[in-house]
Amino acid sequence: MINIGMRPHDLGKQSVESLANKIGEKGFNCIQLALKKAVADFDYNNGMMSPGMAQSIKETFYKKGIRIAVLGCYVNVTHPDDIERGKLIDRFKEHIRFVRDFGCSIVGTETGSLNGDYSYNDNNGGEEAFERFMDTLKILNAEAEKFGVIVAIEIVKKHIINTPQRMKRVLDTINSNNVQVIFDAVNLLDAENYQEQDELIKESFELFGDRIIIIHAKDFVIENNDIKVVPPGQGLLNYALLMKLVKERKPYIDVLIENCKEEYMVSSKKFIEDLYAKV
Image (cartoon, rainbow, N blue to C red; front, side):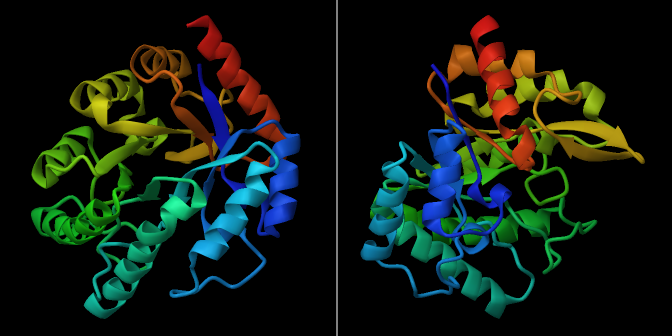
């Protein structure tokens, strides 16, 4: 009752056929596909997508039993330069228009930073940043509603939507079922709050568990007073709690392993599957 997937670009940028072969061999049945990061068959630029392109990519993965669960468009949707932000919004809209042709209904992103390079800005947690993000989200949501697809957003501790309460405020403000959540427990944490992870995970499921449609899976350790990502099961994340909540609230949800080196992918998949069966 759980689907385990991964991100093709964690294997490095390759042809679609090569990616499909490698992912299929590892036993994964779904992916989060970021064209610009993963696919070497062409240099993706705005305006290049078409139904033919999307369906060709979809069919290549389908032949290996792999479904595209999320079309990733991880761009700084709150870019401080309005001209650049406009270009990034246009790219996201293109993903929204053609996502169904990939056999998928979800376009995923994070919530951005007031720094153009996506780095942390001290004002990311402020009201001005929130309003700027919401201005963009309203545009993307309107496009998603036209095409009957979903914009899925992630909390990230250093970005603009950085707490469970702030995510709940986004969902209440936008008031649209076309906006849903990709939940990554590690993204909630930093060196100061990681010992409160149980409360943060539970709070997230209480506040917006009904809106979680994808789970991202990685793990962490604390190194040099900062979060360092490690493969699932090799760190400090309370996976037993996370999988218990997933099993209770989100049967058959897609769980996508990320930031994982190739040599740990299969063992990470087995760790999650075994733990899910036990809880």
